[in-house]
Image 1 (cartoon, one colour):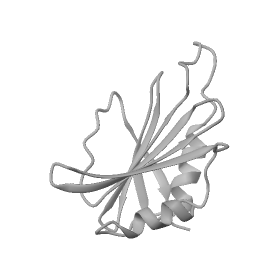
Image 2 (spheres, helix red, strand yellow; image 1 turned 180 degrees about the vertical axis):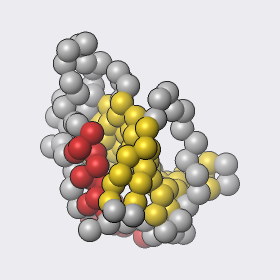
Image 3 (cartoon, helix red, strand yellow; image 1 turned 90 degrees about the horizontal axis):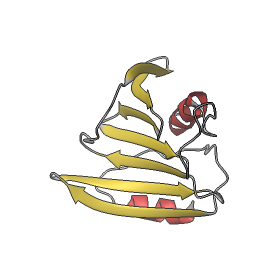
Length: 132
């Protein structure tokens, strides 16, 4: 978390950080960059199985392709968009002018009857942990 906190200090805006991550981490990679005039930061958490949980922070909109998103309640007054497709699960929301986009990808595509290890509820819990 020390590495993450020092990366956040370099941003022109101050996103909140999660207090809960639902996967065992072996490494964290941070990246700060510009896209379409907005400053963004990526936090990527890798598991021993090479699963990836990425959280993007932006002071503006984050352009990402969606296949079939649905509305989801995160907290009483905080809603987001959630999508589950065969290759990833995504959750996005905006609070205090900061957009958060969380994407979970398993290292291999799951079999048809096999769920990815991170559930929708766990992603919602991560989102809640930002704002507790």
